[in-house]
Image (cartoon, rainbow, N blue to C red; front, side, top):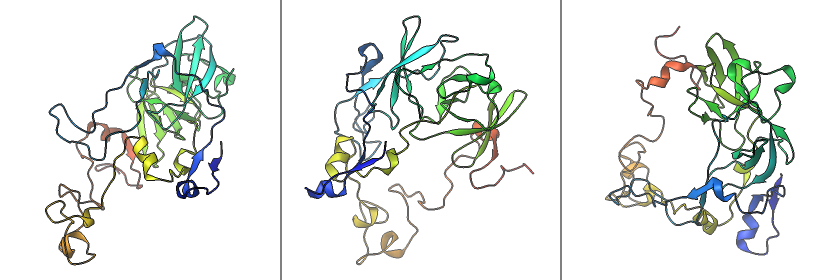
Amino acid sequence: MPIHSFRPLTPAGRFTSLNKQTELSKERPLRALTEHKHKSGGRNCYGRLTSRHRGGGHKQLYRIIDFRRDILDLPAKVQALEYDPNRTSNIALIAYTNGEKRYIPAPKGLKVGDTIFASNKATTNDFTTGNNFPLSLIPPSTLVHCVELVPGRGAKVARAAGASLELVAVEGEKATLKMPSGELRTVNARCRATIGEIGNEDHNLQSLGKAGRKRWLGIRPTVRGMAMNPVDHPNGGGQGKSKGGGGRQHLVSPWGQLAKGYVTRRRSKPSNAQIIVHHNGRKPRGQK
């Protein structure tokens, strides 16, 4: 749905533009597919702050999402499209013919009443939005989402609103995927993926309009390091407006790690071996 703006009757309304979604159900989520969600406020088990800017927010129920799609060769009918406070995408409630009900991330174009399924065999007409297959069966150049990285462990990639990957090629046991960043990566061809792209693609075009709406989401205020005192942040202090501790160093995080242009990804990360081309167009070290 298009972004909806409001008449400027209040200062907040003047700057607010939200994603109006009339197709979403107003019913409460299915109780059997929800569970309690504990709020940590950014604290660990010792009560120490480990994630800044978290706390407060509206109470939320966690919706149990089916990322495995392990009910095979049974058609499922879409019963409702619902809002999920735990993710940027909407979710779809589907009911299988055996009576089982599941929540899945709602693909773009999926409507109430549509029928989808997951299978390990496919024909030419089966590659429609919402159907789930192993990558080895999906034609190249198809847009997919909710992709597994290890067969059977559930979808890990392309689960946010508007996200999708392009299946570039399948060669033997390896499938090549093009990430939204431009990175080319190989995964096992037995990994499952869902056809299409995730819906609610206008999510990032919203303007919350006021600080209070950010607090409803459980996000606390963020203060620039340059506005702090020297004891509070490496970038703090200095005479007037100065960058990096009075101009004596590059911009860093509160713990002194370089904030601009510094590579933080571990070179020894095991999954690096699956990268063919990095997002910046470079090939991994050792490859020609």
